[in-house]
Length: 289
Image (cartoon, rainbow, N blue to C red; front, top):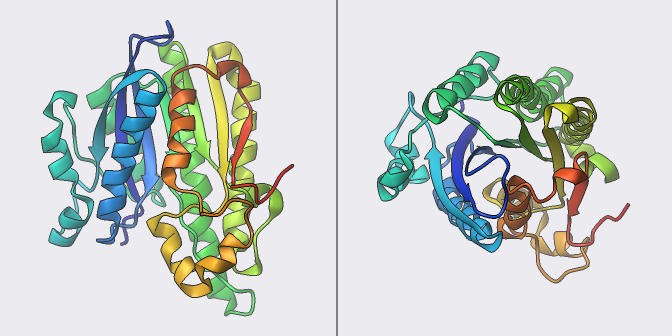
């Protein structure tokens, strides 16, 4: 079974806000199928979070999490998770993995994380897949891709949301950041109907959490990127060409993860709590609404 989730955690020492401080733990779920090429992206994500936290006036040490029970030599070489753990012994890092299309594994991941972290202050949900499935294809295959996409992109997010709300209510509040998509508002092309539907659901989930749980000091935000240059995007770029994507945006280059991470770090700092329910577009001017 393919592994569709890797996560890392940031431990932020927040110096300019009283809540939920002084030590804030952020559990970040990032998608990574485990291919070797994700190794550089995994390290880059961690480095960019470090830089983003510093830009927001935070002191940051991050905790990488990747496959615990199904390590292969290729996965270890690709994700470099154990190397990252060894580089930052002061964080008390652990190594975990789950296939987020499997509910029992999502629950286990959350519970095991709490055993080690004890208290979460922010939950950033970014695990996602982007598989094409043309409507001209065979129906059962099309439906299989639809179910898999929603299981990873939306069902897992819903389950993590339920678990996170329960935890935040017990511990005095917290923040959700959902990494959505421009597709929730603009729509997608015919090859990616399931992806667009899943991100539309994610946005509605985020807004519903904001409306329903604010009195529990639980806030919720959606960051809606356009096309972002990550390892997940490379097959699309290879198939359709970078020029096709550049023609859609108003800036001269594609969005990169470091264009998004400072915003996420700032939300985690508590500086945007009164903007709960907000959707923040980061799509290089490709869609405005």
